[in-house]
Length: 280
Ligand SMILES: [Zn+2]
Image 1 (tube, rainbow, N blue to C red):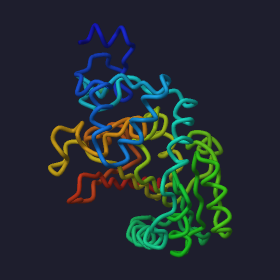
Image 2: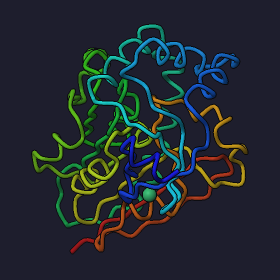
Image 3: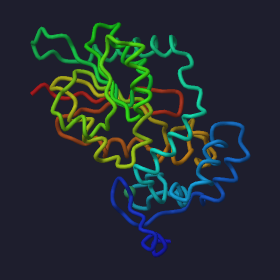
Image 4: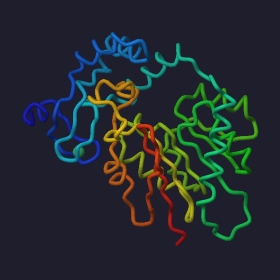
């Protein structure tokens, strides 16, 4: 298996190891997807029609145990995938419910922010803001609220609907390079979509102000409620999702001496990770 992995150039996005265990081939996943009545059927159809989206199967790294795709797509190919996928997706459902849920989360998380003594309005950033609902929830909780999102169409719609907030069409890495920081950085169900998880996680941490909080959620591998086998789970839908993290993988990804991680209890198979950045 490790010989095969070197030939196809597998390299673990978390630990760089080349050895993997194959969990399911792409062909088997595509026939599985075709037999579902959920979004996997549509995703499978898009993947089958575009050779640039070939992911070569779902694998587990032999070194660190991360479940991930064998071949990660290029940003261009992934962009085309999202254009095709979102063209028919049910965008913008449950709007008010989503704003309220985000406002509740923001209220709970904001208690964990340590004040730096400034009287300035506290700043919120949603990474992967989609149609801007969480940003609006944060604004309603008194934050100066910003959202970033790769999909320019979603950004245009969010800006039109919530003109009091600030939305940018950009990547987290490019946005972090501007040097701004935020008291609460929120990233819900996004990191599993990232091609380069290490640069993504590092940029997220750079965006957190001293004393601030980073909140990350993602589907959980290794949770007692996670379906077995993993590859049969509705959350395993490459290339929309590219990685499935166990707790240890997130701890490794967000391992920085100025951040203290804590997992919130979740009865469902999803991680809710709260990382507090030291004040000094
Ligand atoms: Zn690994």
